[in-house]
Length: 420
Ligand code: AMP
Ligand code: MG
Image (cartoon, rainbow, N blue to C red; front, side, top):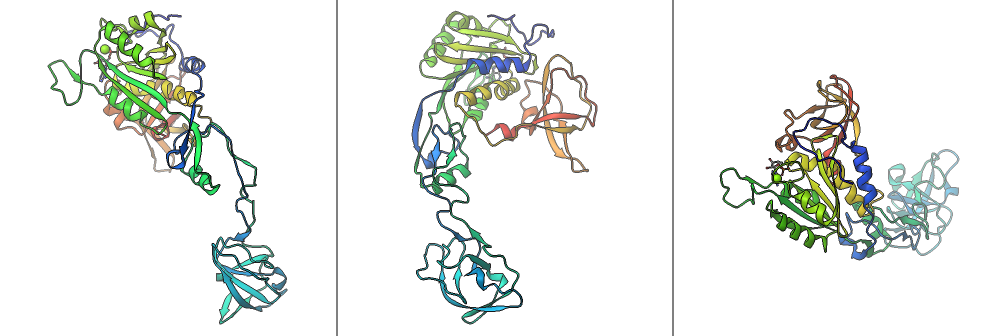
């Protein structure tokens, strides 16, 4: 299906695709890669788990002390007043105590050390008085206190992590605690990036009059620099159908995803669509969003293709709203440690046209009442990267909303949450 050709200057929203529909269409069209690889634990953070991890033993693997102190028999806790117990030895973490604790005795113990046979309670060292080889204990203790039980965290045979878990530092530690040195994760996603436009110069080149430096490839590369992605840079491509055809076709042979910028709106040099419509199954959408209205999406051979707008802010907005969710689905990420959006108080009056989603760059901070408040970064040109560089959040003004009064609640999407 070919939707009406979009344009940056055309201000009519009729026929434009609402953001949630566009995202739905994107997610519908991409599928999760099935290939995986076995990696060392040191390379597994930020990758997505491909297998179910079962515990091969209990954690903790033995009853152990939760505190530094003294292991005692609970029967020795006096009903009232005090009692003295003889210290007959010590057991430090990593050791085991051989022998049986008898009535009237105790053993010095450190955090993590196995509970000696006969003992069933640990008294914190701060709660006893030590006099030479004896300790004096009071009656205010509970039988069984300060002991971490074998298997109380994880039981042998339990499924600890499931496929689709995006691995965090805590997961890596958890896997290590289970003695696991290597793990199956989804293979890295192969992504090719390109900038299109005759006006573009690579940084380091001498820029001619009328030329600009290519920034989109650099912001995209930076946004894609993560453990689960392999980037291939196609460079700056001229507005030449033969070149675009050749480069995109070649990249589609090895990449899972191609992301290009520029050349998707109506303009004399907008060849991307001509090329892609002849060699792939690409739709050109007019999305009801500002910025980021023109968006090309589809497939080329077996590769997913995103043609993002040229304007630098629009590139990042479309990337985070449409490309990143597609990447996460392709990687099969089912569980990720983020709360991507929340509501905050608008610190100012905002103009908003109903009928499109507006993505405004904002700065969230606490107001004097301690509430989260957000203000815009000022002028919101989609060509002005500084409006985004200053921001710590996107303000999402939903499709149906109109002007927002200062003090109204609005949705914010902290940028930090998008960057893992
Ligand atoms: P286009 O969609 O190709 O017409 O591009 C829209 C605007 O974005 C034009 O002003 C382009 O010069 C600019 N632009 C396109 N690609 C880039 C790029 N890679 N880096 C910086 N600006 C770009
Ligand atoms: Mg262009």
